Figure: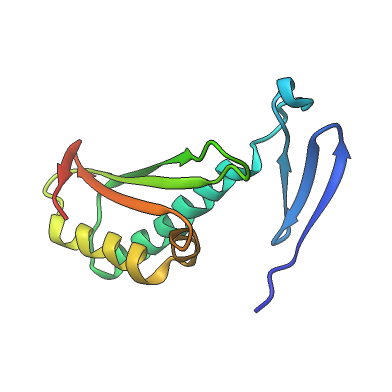
Length: 143
């Protein structure tokens, strides 16, 4: 299954990508000749990673009949110093909030996503160390 993305230069350091029918503006910081009208490309990898895992996790938890929770993710990429500057380590924090949350089901959902289903995670793991942390009501859960 092909996923074509069309990206057009719109001036200075700004680009408009057409991704599955949606426009995404990317731009550089002012100090690099951009106008800061959109995110930089590399952090978008982290957004794609959290989006991919997030969709997996909420789908899995729904099948497990886990309800009434709030959920957010943080992804932090540590970059190399040398060019090409790439993420050598990515820390993913999965944060769940709610009463009487089943930590065993949460751990299973996160593990299934990060170890089996999320294709973005699989691609990034080929070049970076991906560290997974799970928090329930701000308490880190051992996995």
